[in-house]
Image (cartoon, rainbow over all chains, first blue to last red; front, side):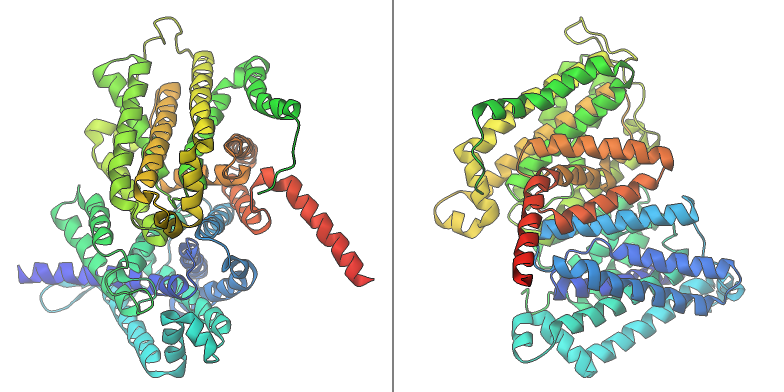
Length: 289
Length: 328
């Protein structure tokens, strides 16, 4: 019984880590610039395909993951400078439409280049084998996800809490006008953060390909999931995203074990009720509270 | 917005044109009526979205839910209750309206991203339910085996789709008249105000929440009607009617044509499906690329959709002249 509970917990956490990696960039976009960004999944997908292409052609998995993050980050930076900037002044509708447009274009381009079928990332052998963790054999890949997720979450937490960059970012999320008034270049801060966020999404898309499988529909299929993490956690809230991602991962896994048929819509129904109860999310930043 | 005063004759031509095209198409392309019917259905769907999103400013990506609900209701009604198409259509409209009223009442006190997320959650619940309830809906195989009686016992649905085309056109015309009246009524004007500044509208005594729920319900009813038409015209309901992609497509169609014009839906849906049809012939997935590109350009360059092309060209000319003067 205990071993079963631990298995569910590990499954849930590893899934949650991927959701967190991909969504953490989105929470900044939505919290800091108040942009409804439905194209975020596209950056994760691009990262995944880059890693898939490289590893299928014999590239080293870790280098491929780094290349995935870099590619997604660079593309994110270009998109921010060219397409997103005119959007900040426009309404939510324009933002929804334009970012959906980006997701469509990416889906079309990926289909044209890689085909419509699922596209695997080749993981190293030792990750695909189960290893003994004391009470049972458990897939090494899942443990790898938990480790990477935990390391990045810790680094993010240190940066957000301890560095001047983190202090500026938190200030800008909480009160962008006041942050501008005290001399913080919010636009540059945002560009930088956008690049990092897209890079993390690309990394998440690459190493998480074993959980969220890569296919051209990825960008639209999973964006709802990423949005759920951001909105449930509270836009712009890092801790909120982490809690929401973990909760989502564990609830979803529990659902799959116990009520396989009802799991997907129970999840969305839960999100629905939660948002009616707390429209600003679980842990909203000060600006939204 | 200041509009140039156009003569009543010109306005009459403008009104007659779309309907003339609907009629001419019927005779000019008898072997393409299936495509025409699909376009008419999506015009109706886009028009329903225009009422909620365009006029009232309700940010939603959940309209596919009403379309799908209408489609499944009409299909299931034909299979389990009665093969009469009009009764099935009425049932679909009623169910979609009821669902719109109930969910609208729950979510319309929120706004922005939270509202968007709630609409996404609702349509996701519907979609997952339809996927799981295979016994009822056929799951991802789709709902098959829909058989319909002739309309009024006289006009049979046949493989050439003449009946379906005219049926869809008549339904569109009916809803169009209602929508046209509605947005010019005091009720429609109050929606304009709510979109622009809900707080101020509340301050001058408008029951904002009630008005939003009302238009959301009407919009849901029309979307359900479009869904019912779709199920009846093709005698099939696929799971994809409930997808985010459907919501995306109808929004694209509306925005391409232009919001808050009613006729924007006509132009946008037509262009969307013509482009999709052509680009899908080049490569089955090319249309996503084209549609996404059209969407990005529309948002960046045209605030009012393609019906805004004329004014936008004028603005560009003015700016050009202005720049030329500055340069001198």
